[in-house]
Image (cartoon, rainbow, N blue to C red; front, side, top):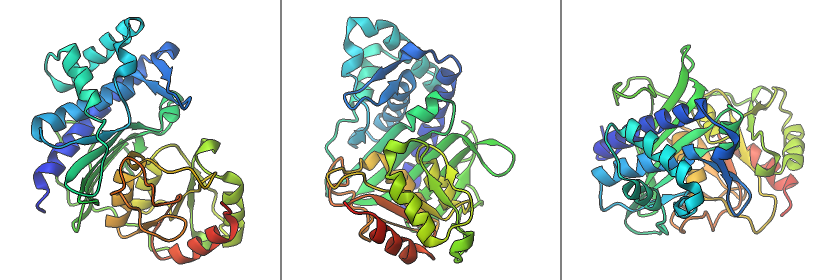
Length: 331
């Protein structure tokens, strides 16, 4: 394997254990287990528990590695969230196979507050990408990536509800720089290596190309997306799903295009929303840029502050998609 063999193994097991937590909580999910963040987006017990499990495993394996994560534990520290804290503690202890202390678990969640940057190495984590999909029992992803000196070097992308193409529900892609993408089982205890490689499709005819779109209209400019579909002459029905599962679908050749179109010039994407997905598509042979054709820059902190929007394709049709986006996206 590569120089990141140990990191890749830890990332795979961390995502697998987080998937156990997410699935267990989803089975018993009740409405008051979701709270609203400042931006009105929902966060559930599973978001917190998933982040605790992944950050806990990373802390045990790489205690000096900082983490850029989506969640923070402040909202859990109030008296009114005591029951939520207990639920999270129970699920984290069960998934990790050890009795965890409440403050230890809250501390693991807060490991995700690193600011990022252009030097050294750090992890970026979205414990549940697509929380609204999770709540409606649709697609969601657990997305973990390792960044060294601003470059993506490892990505573990787990989709607990995403079919693996072999008759099973649950997908895990492991991407490693210069080593491609392997398809793995999402089940704990299964091998962390595989001969099954993920590759983008070889479709170069736009009439046959399939586009992935978000279920949530607020995640992209859908009016512009419709114009782009017409401009490109796409004939296949769009693949609509939540989360970075869309990156996984492109990486394994089940679609050719994923667009994340900005709704304003000021909005910037978060690095945890794209790290694991972007490296998966690129190492599978595809191409990922912003809407101005620039590579995504993960060295600018917690946001892709030097980029505007995202275009991911199988590479063969990237220039044509980019031209259509430039024509119809006015920000």
